[in-house]
Image (cartoon, rainbow over all chains, first blue to last red):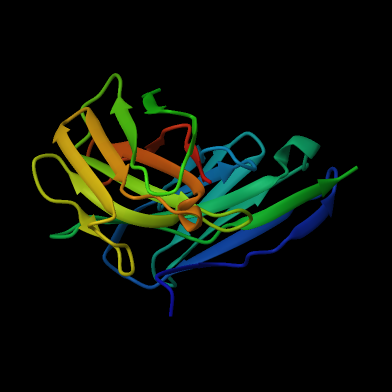
Length: 111
Length: 115
């Protein structure tokens, strides 16, 4: 089983739709969680950190469920500019500090 | 926000030559830097984790003698692709973070093409 798993998609949604992505992680020692966005042939850019209490930034809402070991990202009112690959990132501290990326979920917003 | 500078942005070289890629954290001290490789239409693949002043930790399947990583200071890490071959052609990206649970800041990537 992969340490961090995401549905690769693609998710094709119409403009204005609401779309949700999930990401599961296997290591219960994971400490911090992030969603990144990557456009084609560009570096990933931080979209938002994910907090236990859940957090919102405009049209984006992130949630963490430690008991079930998954994080989610909800995008409301999708825009064409939201088309990208969304990467789930999990930090695990310890003797071997490790950052693990999910494989990414591709989103295509259609006019 | 924090800035990570990566150079060069792209490089074309002949097979058998070595290529050095630099990654600098411009306005913070990076305790850890990471190097990734990404082939077209594939996800980021972690190659190695580099902590300042110690040897890099390589992921399984990554040849440490081929991909030399040096993290001599808290603001600079280098990746040298030695004796590059066409199959090494890829997009290489670095990232850096201040502390264990802090977010990653990415360089803009280096597109390597080996002829």
